[in-house]
Length: 187
Image 1 (cartoon, rainbow, N blue to C red):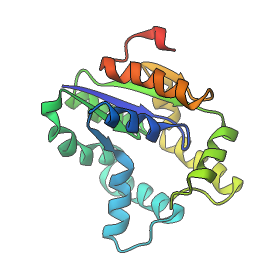
Image 2: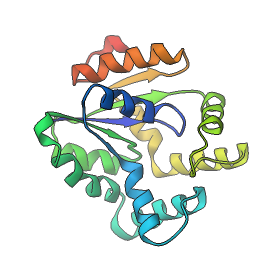
Image 3: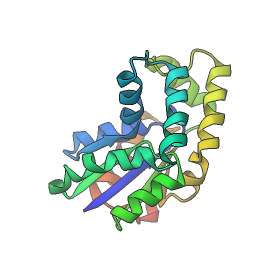
Image 4: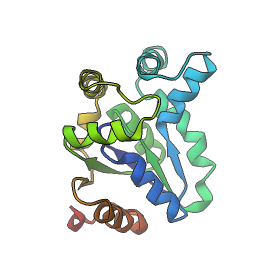
């Protein structure tokens, strides 16, 4: 079974990449859902502060690969599809969990500038999106401390999401539809 992990800073276009996979009939697993579920199960309100705290708490209590470990049953349950896309890699520990379980695991990094990402998050207005530029920068620093930059640096393919929406969609469709990320011509 082939598993493709998607990584990118908040607002870069990871969710859009997952939506594209779903539109192609490819099952997706959202790593952020593990955190949102843990917050909800704790009876807390979903907001940037509680999500950030839960992400840190889970990793302290259960190890840095805990979110990936909790995604494994979801991925295995979709094994019959042959290809699964995992949205939201954040650390090398998570990459190690997936590579240990799925030897053909590969990484696609989605990159967008901070200004572009902030604008998108302001337009998206999900409960866990930052309310201010300061909160946005704080979230970026946390993501970098968790290790997202290391995962981005090890990506098999890096795709820019600064162009038009349709160009990004076409590039992602091509990458995901292939079921492989070793085609360096897609950069």
